[in-house]
Amino acid sequence: MAEQKGEKPIEKIKGVALQAAHAETEPAPVRHYRAVLFQLVLLVVTGAFAVLTFLVKTTPFFPIDLQITKTLQSLNFPLFAGLMSLISWVGFFPQSLIITGLNILLIYGFGLHWEALMSLATAVLVQGINVLVKDFIQRPRPAAALVHVFDTLSSYSFPSGHVMFYTGFFGFIWFLAFTLLKISWKRTLLLVIFGSLVLTIGVSRIYLGEHWASDVVGAYLLGSLVLIGVIQFYRWGKTRFFIHQPVAAGSKQDGT
Image (cartoon, rainbow, N blue to C red; front, side):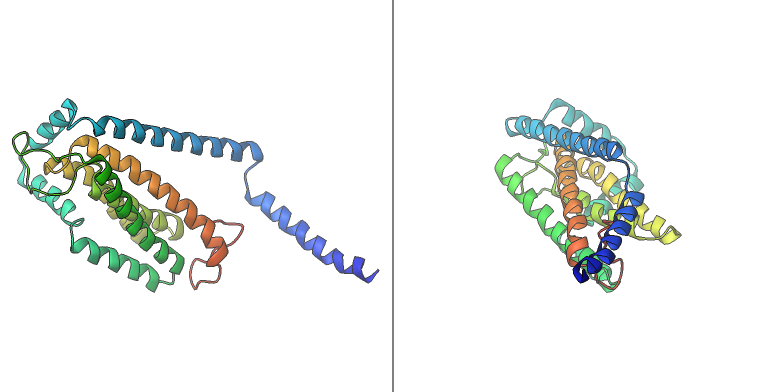
């Protein structure tokens, strides 16, 4: 009898928890639809990158690559040229290392320990994958005989390391700002800054003659896949290992 009485409070707590879970989650059909949609998008992105990689492996550049570069480089505005150079400058060593380290330390300093750890992991992962793919494809960079090359780089061209890094690392910081911060001018400013970096870095790399447009597209596709994987692992790990961090602690219910 005592055992039966002891089970009642537990069952009651379970019932309350289930009700709370049902109240906070979408109905099963909606969740199924979203899951299928997410998997479909992931499949399309993966397929697009695989096809592009196959084509790039045997093609130094496509005619449309040359056309896009010449069109962008025909924009002879000093302000535009300076902006393109500045956007790419952020991604070169040593400033890329300094900016990455400062962002991670800032995130950690605000008590976002899991977020800081995942930011570091993202920076390392995206760079490592980029080097592996570049060494496998070994695509030469645009030649100075074809387009104006602002700086001659010795590494391979596909996929763009700058674009992958910006999409993965800055994209993850954009995600953190979007999901964790309250609506304010500071949040909006962060979203604009990091979002602009991700969106404009591709144009910058093509304009400077250091990558073909197909290098940039491939980097956005692969960088997005890495970012999706990082976000999924971040959401999974936060509710298990960093529930008690000082700020933005996770919970089984919110999953953020």
